[in-house]
Image (cartoon, rainbow, N blue to C red; front, top):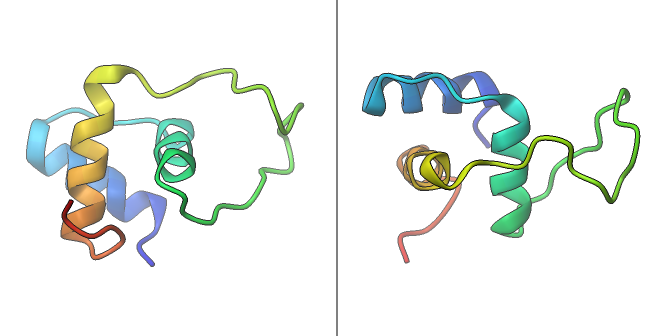
Length: 72
């Protein structure tokens, strides 16, 4: 499985913008991928910074390119 840094680099290459790791975690959750809870997370149910709609597609495309998701 690719690291968050690899996903960030792939998105940066594709669209020229840097995405936050919390957005990547949100997209992983939306796609049913396993993720760990951060030790500094205050609540396991409330997401402080959900992924914005413009960033979801590029993150998912990067995950497909890195073999984390299947084309669908």
